[in-house]
Length: 394
Image (cartoon, rainbow, N blue to C red; front, side, top):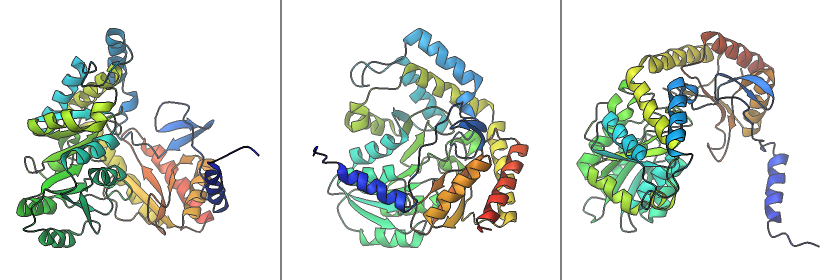
C-alpha cells in the first residue's frame, strides 16, 4: 500500500463535506465588476472588496501598461538588495502625503504589513492589548512577536482600560491595537477612546485601516481622518488591495519607525518588491482618490440604499456601519445553502462561518461598491427576499 502521511487531511475534508461546510472556490472569468461572470454564470457581485471600482479604472490600467513598457513586468529583487525602484519610492511618498504622516513603507500584502510590523517592533518582554475581533494578520503578528497578549472584548473600552491599569508600573513596551473597520461585522472601532487610553497609559497606538482606506475620512483617508486624530495614532496600516484596486499593504508612521521597518520587518526583507505595474497603478489610485471624491460619495449612497432595503425585508444585519453588511443567519450550513441558492438565482454573496466568525454567527457577507447601479441593487434585494423566504430566514 502506498505511503500517504497526509491522509489525515483527506479525512478532515470528508468531515467538512459531511457537515455541509465544504466550499468550492468560485472562479472569476471577467474583471472585478458589479455584474461579473463566475463559474460561467453572470451574477450581481456582492462579494468584492473593490469598493470604488478602481480595479478597472482607465487611468489605473493605462499607468500599468506604461510601467510595463518602461520597467518590465517584475522588479527582480527584494527592496534591500536591488528591488527598490523609483516607482516604489514615489508610491511611499504619495501615501505619506495622502495620510498626513512623515513616512510610509509598502508591503507585499496587507497581511504582511500587519504581521511584519508587530513582529518587528515588539519582543518577548513586551505586552500587546488587542480587540478580540482584530484581523488574523494582527493576531499572527502578535504571536510572532512572542510578546504577552491580552485580549479585550470587542470594542469594550472599559475592559481595555482595566487591562491597561493592571500593567501600570510594569517595565515593558505596550501596544494597543485595533482594526479601524472590522471586516466581518462592518462596524467602526471606538478609536477616539482607545487613543485617549493609549496616551493615558503610555502605549503605542496602532490601527489597521484596511477596510477604512478609501471608505472613511476625507477622500478615503481612513479612521484617523474620520475622527480627526492626526498625530495621535503612532502606526497606521492600510491596504492597496481593496479600495485602491491593486495589491499590497502599507504602514504609515514617523520616519524613524519606517527606517526601522526597512531593517527589521521580515516580509519586507525577504519578499520581492511589487511589480512596476502594481506600484504605478497604486500611485494613480491615490490621484483618483484626491481628484474624484464623488466615488466615495456614491459608495455611501449605494450603501445607505442597500442597508435600508435589507432591514426593511427583515434581515439581521448586525451592527454594521459601513459598506460591509452581513446578513446573519446563525448556522454555517444554513449560510452556505443561502449563498448557493443566491448564486443560482443571480447574486454572488459569499457565506462565512466558523472559524472566520464564531459558532452561531454564520452569515453571508455583502459589500456594495460605488459602481453598482441602483437597479442592480434593487434586483439583488428582490433575489435576497425570494431566497430568504424560501429558506425561512425571513
